[in-house]
Image 1 (tube, rainbow, N blue to C red):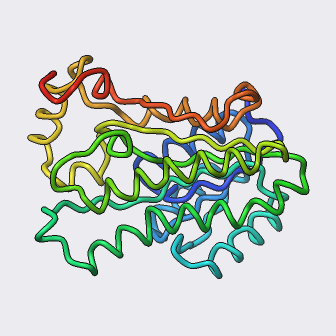
Image 2: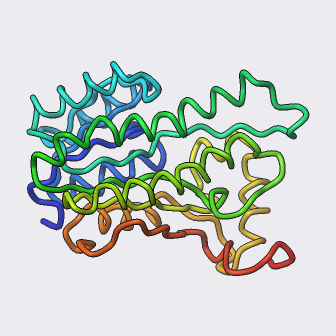
Length: 251
């Protein structure tokens, strides 16, 4: 499979869950991939599994210095990155009155600041290369609100907006920027907040009557990273089983 041949990709949060599915799909399609994550053990294991086409780099998305080092490591290993997937994110629940400033800032620093810094870090090399693709992970909570997710939803709406700004700024340089908006996906992060009961409830609320799997979402990232999406930028694409097809009384 060669849909991503000659692509050098950075995938943040790439060691586990949705990120790992994206990494595997990218390598399967011919890309060289840098797995960037704070989770060292699973990240190194995934890189070892995938062989010469992937490396692991420990990375803090909220640190500008860490981003500089990550791009340098990617360039040294495979050449300048021409694909960035800003996948790293954290999920925290809490009513507005129960959400501390510290928790809000924690979610902001990983989800929103991390996405901003990632785009900023790769733009110079992508401009020099004559183009590239940036894919930002938002959420259906970046399309509509959900109770008890004030910090998470705020960051996902922000990612949606930053994506459109970046698409307008960077289009003349051949750099495309799009956002992906998954619904409930069966990963460790979502299971941490409710387990099987949360999965069953989520499945009951969508048209397809099941929660998504990482393998349902990864192909969209392949498409957006590939030259097949050469005329797609500033788009927001939901992969949600129909969650956003109706209003809150649906399901």
